[in-house]
Image (cartoon, rainbow, N blue to C red):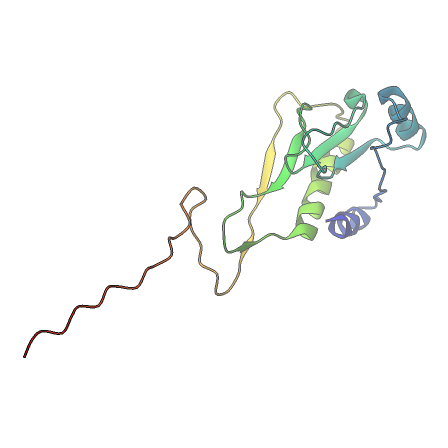
Length: 155
């Protein structure tokens, strides 16, 4: 995912820096100050380890998107894979690359903070040869039991 985001950002004259926001010593104000002093005005929030994790920032200062659904409580636009279906391979470099364009667009339009109506961009996956597809909510096929054999008819 990060490689795809870096390549897409570089193609548009930007760069991606990975920043660990999990440091418990960083308050919201301190982390916001560090990012602004470094000239960071936008970014993507990569999937977190748990939906219980929080990224606490002064979001009004940044052009940002969430990648996936793990960032909760912040109404950002997001980029995600289409809901998982058996037999579909997800393209993580493409996911990272797709997250860059909305951020760059927001920066060009001088937009910051959560949007009034967040958008969600869903990326389709690729079918895996030999793996059947089934609807998302369909139950998994039950194992077939062998048919009972009939006794031979008397002669």
